[in-house]
Image (cartoon, rainbow, N blue to C red; front, top):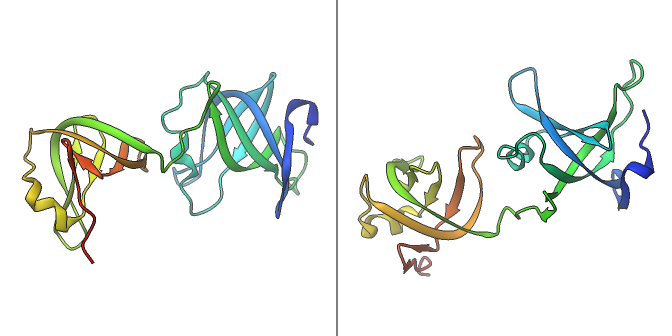
Length: 190
């Protein structure tokens, strides 16, 4: 099945081909044979369209908080036709999530703010504490050299702000703490 330009808007051209912007209703994620998420299905004006993620990236994290029925705008390039026969529906290589329910999609690096009760400490690969996990499901990352003076404790309340992005498992967000409980965290000295 070939792309119907009436169902999407031609955006520009990149090294992979024409980029199309398609608005539709989010239906569900699509699982890989190993249980990962390899794409999403939307419906644009009653026509199903599949967006396939690239290998080795975290495109799925953009969709883990969406519910079926939400309106989304996605950009993608037409996928190569399946050599075994006709595709069951339009298939695109996912480029980016543009909008959710008429609003611009949250940029992964936009500042975020989280708050909640500390339910556990998080540790860097070498064993030093590097943040806290809150009862909200959010992870507040704090460089180990800045963690100890903050005297964070289990059950303590935390308010943190800084650049954020969704956690890979969809349970919340990771915030790179710039401010914690009203205190600005100084950058590492040179």
